Image (tube, rainbow, N blue to C red; front, top):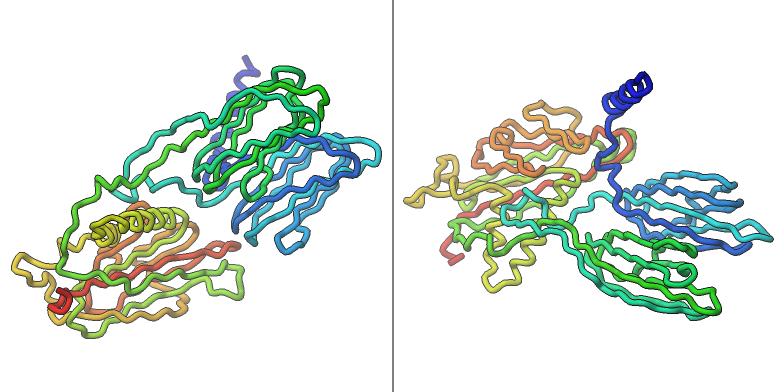
Length: 447
């Protein structure tokens, strides 16, 4: 009883003192399990195509002494270690995108050696389909499972069997299963179109199963390597599992709406803020919006954000716009933009076609400038991904937030407005995004 109570207390301490690791930074995007046998003095070379900010963990176990190397796309040795009959774990954050070489070298002159390596890849962001609540025209698509290939085969020495599978779409999962009929199943290797080694297995009496998430549209080669003179019989099956996702349903899109204004993309920019410890790039910046008289501008809208949630939502929006523009009636672009950037129908005109705001009687035009800012009044402090965003009081009073997207529809043209950004991350630079859309009054020349 005392032992059971002690275990319960230990479990509670882990929950409350050590918070759960199920945060986005620890979610696994892909795991490559590789079990192989290296000949004496043999170097096994493979590839990993990595992107900036990928996080990898290598877990390597060997029965003898081996060298483990990771080489960057430029040819520099990122990591090298001597592993002696033990399990070694090494983590790596990718700085430069490209094709990395992975080498496992058997140092023995006399004996073969068994090596087991697990490579865990975390990629951020990794969005499948449209974000659930970022677009009001999306529908859920459940997971499906279909058989891509199956059968029974026999291979003999120097007669490897190769299967070409695909292409699979981003977010799909490749499920490969093989059962032996006679003897042991042969060694297996699975590579993708980029020649990345995603799975390897030695001879086995057990059922072999590989589960491979697809990070982008890709095809795969599955190789069964035979070293048996008399032949081996095996059953195999390859399944495709699609992800649960949300997609834009064009049947849910609203009918084209003709506005008495024309939206103009005035600004679409990305700002890089250096880390606090970065002495070469500023870690804060202030955008100031000024106005000049122009009788054609009715009102304006500003959108801003940072982090993977903003990127995913805007990417889904852009994708839906491109898709819908292919149709015969390509009027949905303005509808989607106006949804994200605000609803101009309630602000633009009254029934008698007069402007709602007296401040816009003469109309205005916007000019913009960017400058470094050391401080700013905290009107409506927002924090996303360690980036502090402070809008001016006029923007803050009209601010709406949906799915990590901040937007404000503005008819206040009386004075300056600003957006202040400050990166508070000590080690990582951040990207922030600003979009400005002007709504110009439709003139006779536009008809």
